[in-house]
Image (tube, rainbow, N blue to C red):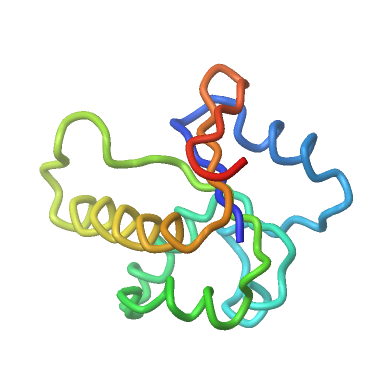
Length: 126
């Protein structure tokens, strides 16, 4: 497993597509769990978590399900935990869920790259 993370509009998608041109990418905003478990790469992973929460699905064990079900997945996710804490209760729940799931996935991942201004900086791995 590998993670590519970064803030909004920092070039994560372009970086991931350039680094892995051979992968077939799915979009977290529309992918089903079945498709996610067989995907090579997922863009906008944070949108998958948002959608699951909006549909009242449990995400506390999502990291474990991915680690066991698709350990070779390349995940591209926006970092949503910086800045002002949202006033809206759902937005706080979403922000916390993304942080918790991505923390577990990063711990398992062989490589984690943070992208800022289109430049990838490896923060874990080679």
